[in-house]
Structure formats: structure tokens, C-alpha cells
Amino acid sequence: MGLFQRFSRARAGRRARAAERRRTPSFREMRAQLRTEKAEADLLATEQRIHLEAERMRRTR
Image (tube, rainbow, N blue to C red; front, side, top):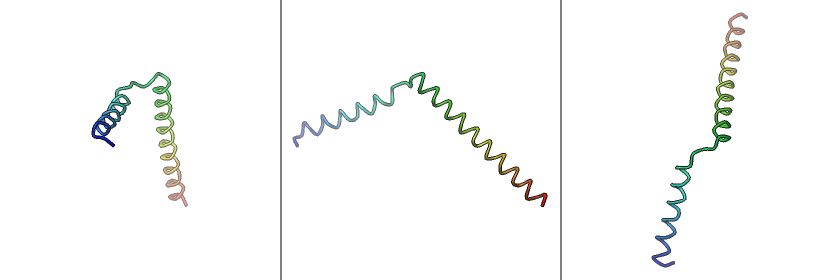
């Protein structure tokens, strides 16, 4: 591999990574992300309710 190929290959990789970072998400991607965040929040709330109910059941025995 020649010296020129090393530098050109390295630069091309940097350019591709930089383009990925700058791309704004599409409307569908943003909605999907919001749905995911909402589902995760609901799951955490459900887990918390389960733990509270289990604690209450343990205390009443």
C-alpha cells in the first residue's frame, strides 16, 4: 500500500463519520424515538408500581 492510499482512505472514513453526525433525523425517526422514550417511561412506572405493591403485600402479612 502506497503512502497516498493510506491518507486518502483515512480521510474518506473521517468524512463518512462526520456526515453521519450532521444528519438530522427524519420525522418518522423522531416519532419512533418519542414512542420508545414513552414506552420506557411507562415500563419504569409499571416496575415501580409492582415493587410498591410487593412491599405493601410483604408488610401486611
